[in-house]
Image (cartoon, rainbow, N blue to C red; front, side, top):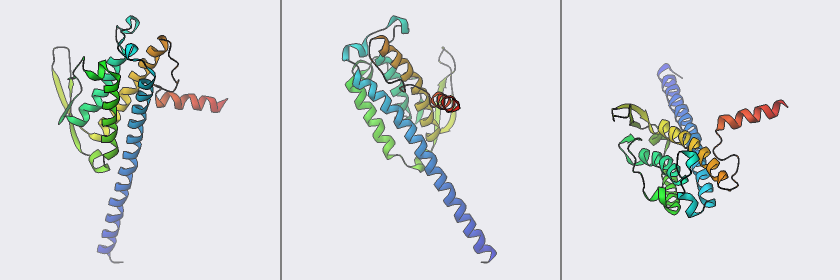
Length: 194
């Protein structure tokens, strides 16, 4: 094999390896994002329509519906906005007040995630955050993969709060719902040491 043939071979192999790495990374992100959505659906399947909108004073007078809406809209902002503006969300909408609408929105998000390709995952995306309560904002550049990871990670904390709220209302929720992967890993390692 001559030097130019060798260069072409190694260049092709390198590009192929990068593609494989991108597919594996995308698969892990998709699995994580969908796992979080499945946890949310499990809670929605359990809760009554009345309890979904019930305000709990010990949780800053919030409802399960508000937490579902908040964390679901983060996913939606990623999917629908040219600039993902997580802080500009519509409050008091159907997702917040009707758990059937919330399930439908989650199904739409799952369909989007099912159809996303590794190439789309690496697509650049601008994200906007509010810097203070006066509305001053800033933008940063990111990727769909990074932001899908963020919205899933963010939703875990809301799942944890929702699970606690539901337990306080008398529901028996699975202890794994809303448990951060790092916390579960730590618990597993401690159990292995015993």
